[in-house]
Image: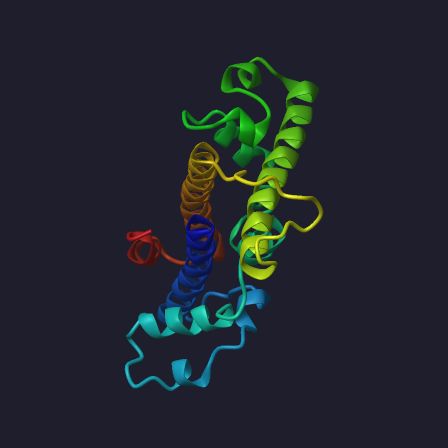
Length: 217
């Protein structure tokens, strides 16, 4: 449960961080237009009237409040939050991203339903079919992990749809869950960093400003 909570905290924090970085870029280069889905965000008044307008943290804290009462424990929600920072054709969990993840040295068959070696041999239509199946497998794996946490917290550890066998959460199973969560968060983090830098460039912010606000990503 702690590892799933950490995943949730990571995505909430990452979203707030990206929002804050865009707003800080806009503050410094006000002539650059930003998309409506950012322009029309409801930011707390205290962030706007802060006595220290150079303080980048005010935007980060304000953005964090936007999802303070929410959670990010579904692929649908992750896509909803982060797709705004990804270019068309390369949205969250697109084929290119998933292909890179399958070929990563730490990938596991239980996540994608296929090994690196098997995937390298595929081309054209068989490769695309394998990618779609891998995305489905990945989604089902994390849906199961998220639901297990939900059952533990909200249903007194009673499963949603099936009888739970006693002792099902063995040490080995827990380790695999933690490994899978770590893999997913690390790959998403790498992808967000890469796509966000391209996103700021596409909006028209200067290289100097992009470097300033992405050097700590």
